[in-house]
Amino acid sequence: MTTVLTPASPLTAADRCDRCGAQAYLRVVLASGGELLFCAHHGRKFEPELKKIAVEIQDESGRLATTTASATGDER
Figure 1: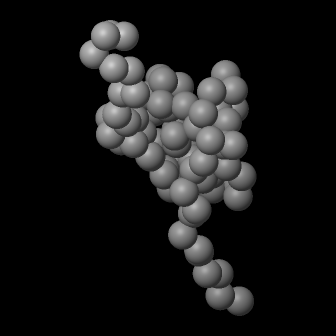
Figure 2 (figure 1 turned 60 degrees about the horizontal axis):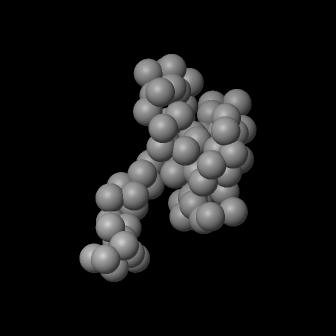
């Protein structure tokens, strides 16, 4: 039997952190077949442990740096 891995779909606003419920920016695929979702904060906090048990880590936290502010100069 051949196993085909499909690329993970991008994380959306509907994907929530399993720890705190904030928007998820990391998907951790486990060897057992499950997956965990984390916000950027908790992804960084648990990174050393996650690397030990993860088959794959999809990190989209770079999207946070590309977000532009919507407030005008007067509002800042």
